[in-house]
Image (cartoon, helix red, strand yellow):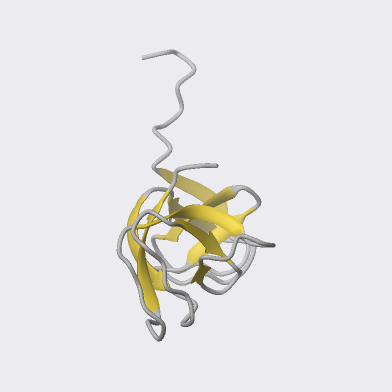
Length: 108
């Protein structure tokens, strides 16, 4: 192991910019992950940066398996414009679904 190795990076501890609940998708610039516990603003928060998660989905979207998944600030969408790329859909969806399963990419 290299003497300058810090960690694998699967879990990253950050200072929460705002209130976060366990299971929330948190985006901080180009870093994103799912909160592993509740945290108030300015408290330490651990993010899981990869894996498959069930997250809220824009109800009108109908993604296919493998489609890119974007975060619009409140839910996952298929729309890339003005949204943050966070992963890929691992299940298809239909109009009316309120959740989806997404594999988060460790980084973009």
